[in-house]
Image (cartoon, rainbow, N blue to C red):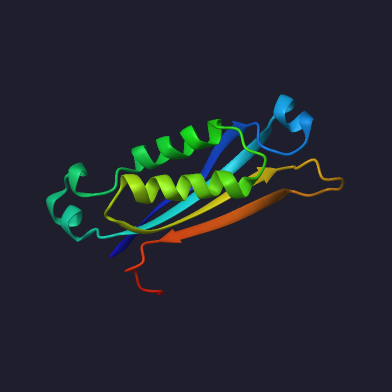
Length: 124
């Protein structure tokens, strides 16, 4: 097994419960970790034998474009799509962070972490 990371993907999106968030939008940072078998790809050096991180990034960008009230919903959509579209991924963990949220006060970010694993995957 191995892990693939996509770190600090910066996006602009329109998530939130307040009307102003829907109109103005906010900066977001997304981090993703997927667990998969990298044995074959480490030998063959073929993209077809691994999880294409360009595709993972595309999934994140596509789901971030779909407006939601809650970051929980966005994070869940991301990990569900990754597991649905990549049968070789056994676990996906995503962190979706809204930078400088409008919650009254000097808060750098609010974030949600969502993890989804296949039922046969161990808890390590």
